[in-house]
Length: 474
Ligand SMILES: *Cc1c(COP(=O)(O)O)cnc(C)c1O
Image 1 (tube, rainbow, N blue to C red):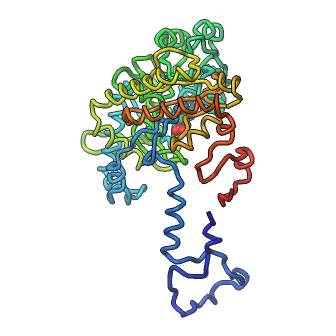
Image 2: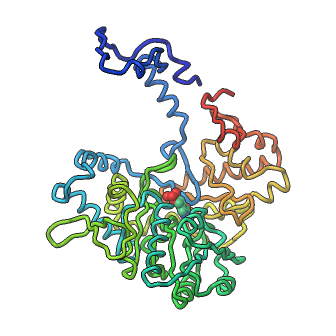
Image 3: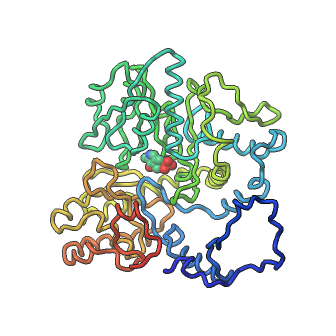
């Protein structure tokens, strides 16, 4: 497909007046003396060009999107409508509290709902995404110990964790210590005990973890940590598995981030925007970033007056549009949030049971909302890698699952169907995955050169990241 520059044909989409503007007030040295070089096509041609490009995108509206850890669920379109209501979308961030009571009330109410969902006591809506929430949460933990005059330097992180966990802890100046997983895919408690000492500020955990397995000893872990004077951080990216069944507070956590764009229905992928609110226990609430939204019985206001606040972590008040969508979604779902989790878990277990006939399932236990297969056997036997399988799925109009994560599973294929999909869609995915497993055996060449039906075929991924060729010529 040609770029818009190559399509340029000198036809202008707009008609300029013949009158030359008087530019004599601009210094001559600043004036361009050559053509500006922008593409020129008619309005209709411009529209067709971008529509054609957009049609090449894959999105949840087009097909199944089982990207593990990302919770690519259906995002009700009506929420977009609500977020674009003029009163919200055109509100100036510097408006006086008095002039934006409605927006502040919405933020306050969302804080209250998130408190209820997580069991926590206070919420900051500021962070722009999950990783930013982690950073904020770890800064809060650091501040908490500073205020106590306790100089703890270490943060423990399971080897199955998302890469942003160690990155966030490290950015806050903590030393990261890895704890290994046991044969059940859970934190090895004996290994944890060995590395636990008075220098440990916190453990960062995801529960269910990135293998989609519930950490059954989480209460024992939280007891160990608290007895040691350490805190527990909950990476809430997997909250979609447990809503209404349990919450981070009941599991013994002190600080939580949520990914509103995952669990609470904001379209994501392609870079945002997202929102990663941080929820904390009573003990930590004075360390939250400012402002938080408060209510004094009469009016809602932005509160900058927290005794040990870490300060500001974002301009203004967070990604407000995402907050609106999350609020609408939670109100819309009500108690059915619990059912969403139940169906997410059911869908994942259904896929897992059907796919383990053909793919290695390293941790063969009931899963939560996602599970991790391994392409290791298929690679050994037929020379077809997990990457090849992912590419082959694209030929069947299916977005590949997450691959090569978590790192502790070789040739990992991480599948998360979410609650939004019907059994027909799951059955179709199963048949495609089983067909690919057969092809690995009988027609491995086809898989190794996949994809065959996509606008862009197999690329050198390293080269493509460094020298992108935006022309799609192949
Ligand atoms: C997605 C994810 C994150 C990071 O969240 P972003 O919103 O992408 O910054 C952290 N941990 C886990 C387990 C995740 O799945």
